[in-house]
Amino acid sequence: MTALEAYHVGILVADIAEAAERFSAVLGVTFNPPTTVHAEGLDEHGARPIELTVTYSQEGPPHYELVQANEHDLFSISLGEGLHHVGLWCPDPDRELERLATLGARPHLRILDNHHETGVWYSHAHEVHGVRFEFVGDKNRPGIEGLIAGLGFAEYE
Image 1 (cartoon, rainbow, N blue to C red):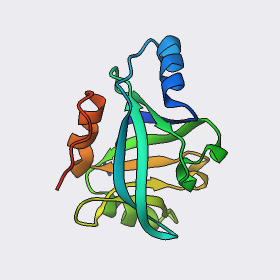
Image 2: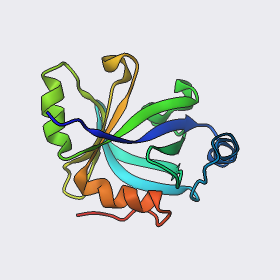
Image 3: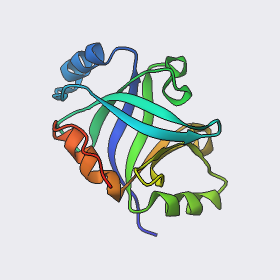
């Protein structure tokens, strides 16, 4: 098995503008303007729209991703501000789901692409010693790299 490459640390925040200012001062990094990404999510409650406002540090890897808390349970402020997930590049998210299912892991949330296939998925934090992972497929890589570069998210087919 080849190790998956970690490229960012996601941090859940109540106020993304305030957090970007604070993290910039503490870490000496520059954050891009926040971007809101719209996607279709799939979890145990079914499919529904997901809206995430995020910003990435320009410096890295690892990059710092600030995620504005919202109403979705996975991104709810009720989880508390702080470390939310570790982002990993993953050639094929569905194949990774199958592999990890043999270890008892299951997705907390899937983000679906335009073909309703898994482009990104988040694990349950309690399955790996309190750490949640975000598995980002190769198809999503150009879009995420666009966000990191401050160019916005490019839709992918």
